[in-house]
Length: 263
Image 1 (tube, rainbow, N blue to C red):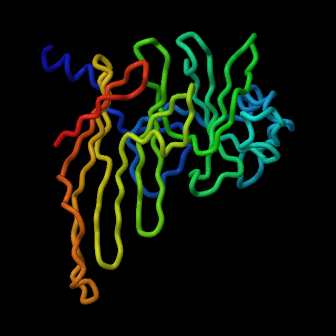
Image 2: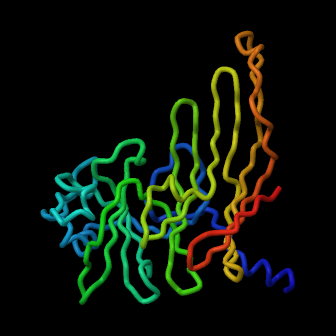
């Protein structure tokens, strides 16, 4: 395979233009998200069987509806308002299914990253809601094809607190939804306090379509102790990570596997 063909096989998912409407405050996103901001018209078409009330736009909040009681698959949203924000369509349940993933929020808190996901599938021309899960975060994602043709999502999210800024890269398999913390592929955790600085960032995300290989590069440009009197006797714990570290994953029909650490 010549150099030009190798380069053509790799798609670099830098976030140049974004349509998902998500407002990033702490980190630079690295995935070109395929999530689209949900319009009132599309929200009404998708959520007729999920929302007990009509979808309306509330000032400073956005799209809003109250939810039906639909069973145990929807316990995370029972009795609460739902605020849909984005949607991505694809073949998430099978190679031939027509599915929709709606990202938004209901009654979530910080451990859930204040968000959740509603999965719908098209049946007899209508959108049927299948489940709603808190902490399944899908506001900034793109589709990746398994060998079978079924699709999974590669997503990213940010978080912060107590001096930390975190940038998560994770997968979402809609046939077996789990909280984002249980499907993390890589995380860059930058930390700063009066004594220490440990800066890390997601530098590059690449997808090799031919090999179905995902590469995530994390850089650690700075790790140091601040020269202040109160910090003089406090050592930096642990060995400094390499300046550049790359993790590689192969996507099979069973998900991502064969993690390889590269430097």
